[in-house]
Length: 611
Image (cartoon, rainbow, N blue to C red; front, side):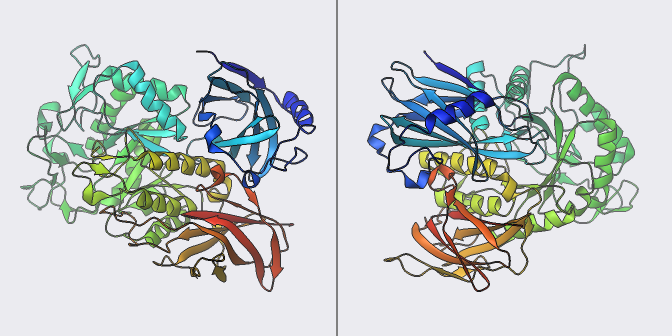
C-alpha cells in the first residue's frame, strides 16, 4: 500500500497559499479568496475522495494533527486543497499534490496554539484547475476533555483480536469521541475486578449477564483509546452488590431497606438467567464507602482507566438504613463523590437518572453533567429544558451529556434505526448545547448497552459523522460560554418559490420550524430545527416512525438584533459537509434579514456585530 506523506508547517502553508493564488480553482472561482463549498458544481461520477480521518479525537495545544484520506481511484491526479476554518474564517491552507498509483494521502497540520478551539477542515480535490469534489472533517484542540465532552461507550469485552478492537476504536475516533464509558465490564459490582490468590487479575470472568469478559480485551481497549487521545471510564454503581455479598466481606448493616426492620433489602431485579440481582447498599454509610473505594483502588492499580463513571438507579422511594432511619438517597451523592475524589484522584462522571440528584451532583467534582432521560422529559422541548437547567446549576461551568435512548419500542427485535428520529434528536441536543451518548460498537437504543438488535443504516452512519464533525468544529458557538438570548425570537420565515409557507415558532411544535437564539461575545447564534413534517414531538421516536423533513431552499428569516451586524454566515450538518456559508444580509427594523440557502433537519445562522 503506497501513501503520500506531506507535512505542512505554518510557514510552508503560507508559501503554498501564495502559490495557490495564481491558480484557477474552476467553477468561476479563483483562489484570491477561499474556495466556497456552496458555489461548487460537483460531478459525483468523478468521485475520488474516500474516508478521511485524524489520528486523534482531540489535540492538546501544540500537538500536530495527522490526517489520512483514502482515494477511490489510484489513477487520480491533481491536488488536494485543504482549508482550515475557525467559525467560518480561514486560518490556514495546505496543498497536497497527488500522483498516479497512490491509494491514500497523508498530511499534517499545526493548529494555532489557543486552547479549547474547534476547526472545520475542508478538503477539495482539484484537477486541471477545476474543483471536482469536497469532503470535511472537524478538529478539536482542547487540553481537558471535560470542557467539550463527546462521550461514547463500549459494551462487549469477550476475546477479540487486536484488529477487531482497532476497527471499533477507529470508528469511535472518527466521531471525535474524547471519552468512552466501559459499560458492564466488571465482575461483580462490589468486586469489579476479579483477582486470583496472588492478587493478579483473572484472565476472564463472567459479567452480570453471564457474558465472558477478557482482561486482555479491557486492557487492550484502554491502550488503544489512549493512543487516540480518548479517556477510558470505568463504569460501576455507587451502591450495588451481588446476592452473595457477605462472602466477600460486605455486611447487611451497610444496606438500604424498604422497611424499618431491615427485613426487605432494596434490590434491582434482573432476569433469572443472570448472575445475580443487585442488592442496594447505603452510599451514606462510611463503612460501605471504605469497602467500595478499596475495591475500586484495586481496579485502578491494575487497569489504567482515567476515571469512574458512577451510576445510580433514580428515585427508589422510601428507604431506611439497617437501624431504621429514613434515607433520602440523593442527599448522599455529592458527599460520596467528594470522598471518592479524595480517596481515588481520577476523573468522575455521575449519572442523574431523570435528573434525580442533579443539583447535588453539580456541586461535586465531576467533569461534566450526565442526564439519563426517561418519561419525565418526553418531548424535544424537554431536551433543551434539561440542558438549559443544567447550565444554570453550574452557571455555565459544566456542559452536559444526555443519555437518551432512540427507537426504544422496537429495539427488542431485529430491525434498523430510524434516521429522521435520530437526526432530529441530535439536532435538538447539539443546538441546545449538549452532547449525546449514543455511539459505541453500535448505537444506543436501550439502557442495557449491549443491546444490538437495531442496525445503523449506511445513510444514518454517514449523517452522524457529519453531525459529530459539526459539533466538534463549531463547539465555540454551540457550548462553552454560550447563553440564551432572552426575548430574541425570529419574527418570520417563508419558503422559496414553489414551497408552501413555513411557520416559525419559539416553541417546539409539530408542523413548524423551531427557532431559538443564543449569544456569545459579539455573536448571535440562531438555530432552526425543521419539524414541518414531524409525526411525533417525542424525542425517543420509540416506534421508529418519525418522518423525514422536506428540504427547503432560500428560506427567508428575520432575526431580531439591536447590534450593528458586520457579518452573517450559516452552517448545517445536512449540506456542504458542514462548511460555513457567507450570507448576504439586510438590516431591517428591529433585526437582520437573511436567506438560508437550505434547511433540512437543522441549520445554524451566526450574526457577528462590530462590537
